[in-house]
Image (cartoon, rainbow, N blue to C red):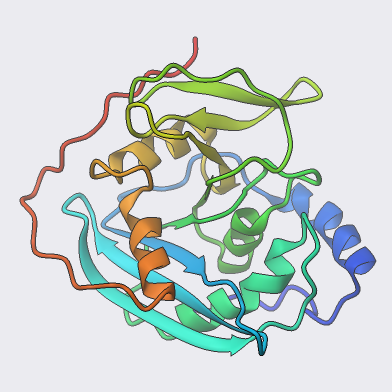
Amino acid sequence: MKAQNLHDWRLTPEQAKKLQQELAGMVCAVNKTGDVRLVAGVDISAPDATGLAQAAVVVLAYPELTLVESKVVKKQVTFPYVPGLLSFREAPLVIAACEELKHDPDLIIVDGQGIAHPRRFGIASHLGLLWDKPTIGCAKSRLCGQHKPPPLEAGSCAELLDSGELIGAVLRTRAGAQPLYVSIGHKVELKAAISWVLKCCRGQRLPEPTRLAHLAASDKLDVPKPVETGVRQIELSIWN
């Protein structure tokens, strides 16, 4: 899976922020997922003492959610840690891992923000634009915005608002568990993004694509046993 060469990665933090503002206008919030047969998840480990980090991508068959392929690359992180500029630090490694894939996913769930970002251009949106593919931001923590706590039932969610603008959803994927922050990455609308995250859950807090990608990036991924077609899906309880 090749990424487009839209810009130079050798940028200062100020140049990176300006580029985010420019590229945010290119994000598509219209649902273009189409017929999804392969769903990918991407994640990256924290850099070690030498600055090396591992990026992982897993590709799962849908709706079975069985593992089709996984790739891991280990490379040097070259961009400094700056809140809001995660994609400039992590995306080059994720792209390198995805270039090793033999299968071309139809949808990618990213462990990070989409438009739920101060400049509406988190790593999920950045990667979606570079790949020109539908992507969903599914983060474990909030970067910006305010929200009410969603009900404790699985499938419940609350609006994530920033200065009155709807930028994402706070989604409870498992009863009583901490919610996830779901937002548009690229070529998907918010309700579809929420629905896809829930359809990719298998009783865990994290959807299976990013859960397995996290394990792969940590060298802890075991090939899962085959499961029956027709995965149990959580009923969506979205706001009115």
